[in-house]
Amino acid sequence: MAQSTEQMISLIATVATEQTVASQKISESASGISQLAERNSAAADETAVACKHLSQLAKGLDGLIRQFQIEDSSSSVSKLAPGLLWWGLEVPWRMPE
Image (tube, rainbow, N blue to C red; front, top):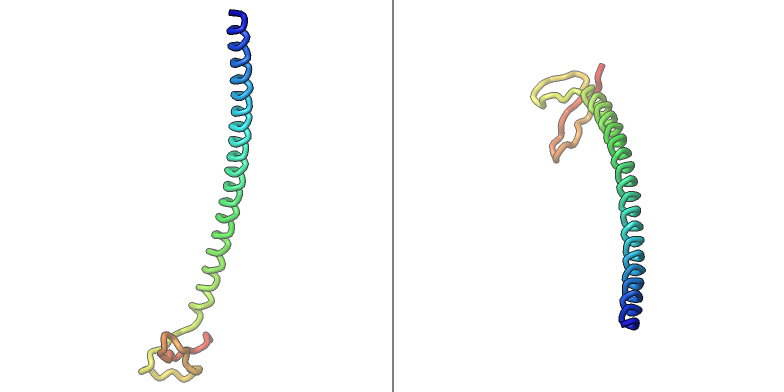
């Protein structure tokens, strides 16, 4: 019976050691996931800032483009510049005054 008790104690010690190792691996994995989540959050914040900046640039470009006036080819406008090529069609335009 003493030998059986020793085997049980040895088995319990082995299982406890394996469980400790498994718990450490789980803890390391959870820490890695947490770090990835933090980096992902920071990247999402940077993306939001970049999108806002891109939106502002697009609004500025839209304002610049709206300064040009596209004229109907049948109208007679005196200050027409050479036409723009747009989808294979020549579109007359003029600079804003």
